[in-house]
Length: 437
Image 1 (cartoon, one colour):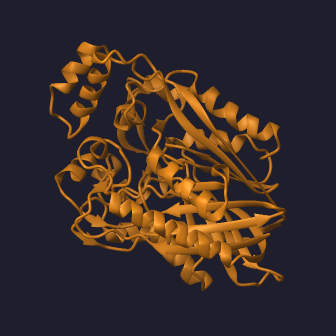
Image 2: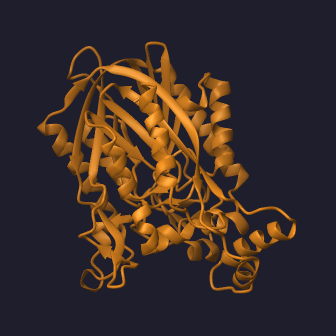
């Protein structure tokens, strides 16, 4: 295996619009820079097959941006879209790079900043490719107590927005360390690791990578090299345990910078402790596949119901979404019946694979991804290759709650319907059938 890691600064200017909290996003732009944002690139080349993993300290990319980025990567580096994985950390303290809620109707992404991120992506990817050298790989797996469910089920069986420490989450933290060959003590080239927890630790108008930025910094310091690469997992229904203590644990609070530091160090310490306990050397075997899956949507509201929503101003952009749906109907155009979601598989070793899902899959989806593989290390990722929408489990549909009901924020006319899990996991089965993972 030939591999290398590189990163480039993508910190936006003060005054940029932010994304992550609709009310804050509509209220005003970023006022300060707390810490820098980066794009990281891991280039891999083995047996004639190549793959590029890109990790961003950003919230989301919409599909149009992903298509543009991958087209540029294909032109500049000769990779096919299936060979390029784009994963965002989902920090809620970053610049707007997507068309989610306020970004869809009021403050769209700034073209100049998006061009900067694209140029930085190509720069990091090219430097990683050009620096590729032989590596040895060591895989491991641990757990973390950072994620806590935010779906507290009440006496009526409905989900409420509150800490739910007894609800299962995806607490796994897989990692893969690449060292310069030919010996096991070679220089660290890249530490790829993943956690499934929302980086929504803090609110306000300061730019920050949130806890993933802290974790990367601590891991770099411990390894003595710039090599840590955070990948966001299936974090759709979790928040950080460090802010789950308001009202005696009955509600969430917005944290401060000490909470962000604590959260990041918790993740880094979990990974470092697992590395000290031992890892397993794995042999390289690179392959990649990608598929666009159509997930069924429920029956949308009627035109009258949409018009009623459009007449209200209770949310910065919900009325604008409703009006956009009314406009489609008035033009004689049908509302969407399915949500397209990209699913991608990248095999790094026959025992190490990444399954990346567009949008915001919840922990239960991530656990089911892990269950598809009886051996080795699996990285179940969300927030990859596009904006998508929340992907709950089908068991959550009757419970309601934000993860079920928020499809409108991503431009869809209705929530997901029963049958979407089958469509999603059939794609993974096809990846397995052809031997990609």
